[in-house]
Length: 109
Image (cartoon, rainbow, N blue to C red; front, top):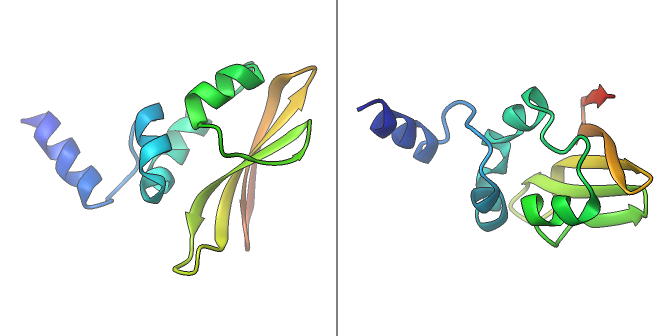
């Protein structure tokens, strides 16, 4: 029964949910519900670029070899409103940031 309730809350986009790599890659509209788990468990920290591609997919916006960004939330025109930025040092993620038009949340290692 608790599993059914979790699925219902997820489908209704209520609350935050456990990070699921397949869901992140296949259902971009659900990414916002997964972000808290990414920060809580520091999922990308210490991962290589290859591991990041496996977890988050092959479509990051690559600004430099040291900064990758994945869209989290977009408007109805496809403009990114919120993004997950990953910062690399020596090919390994050392910090992550959620960037929003109004607020920036950081986790620095």
